[in-house]
Length: 91
Image 1: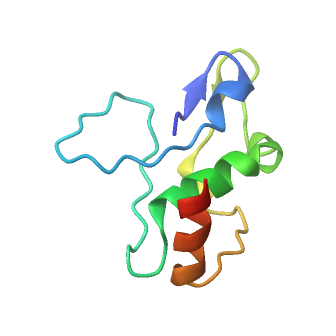
Image 2: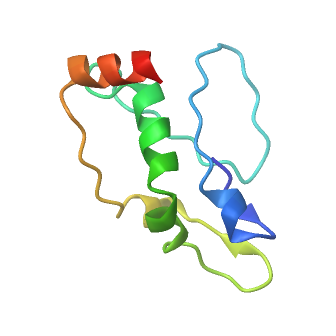
């Protein structure tokens, strides 16, 4: 997800990339969850659904920033892996 933008709304846009060999630009926060316990598609959707909470973590006035240390403080309720997969399959 982006870590800086000229609008705060550009920062709460998480996605799940499953392709190998992807090259990302700067100012991108990469979250690599343990695949045994957290489904990436589920996590990305969960973060997008918590946009208002994520936006509360944004700092800056001209260029807005979202730091990994701030995201680390975001409390997430994550169900067991099998339930995450079922939810992700429906999305």
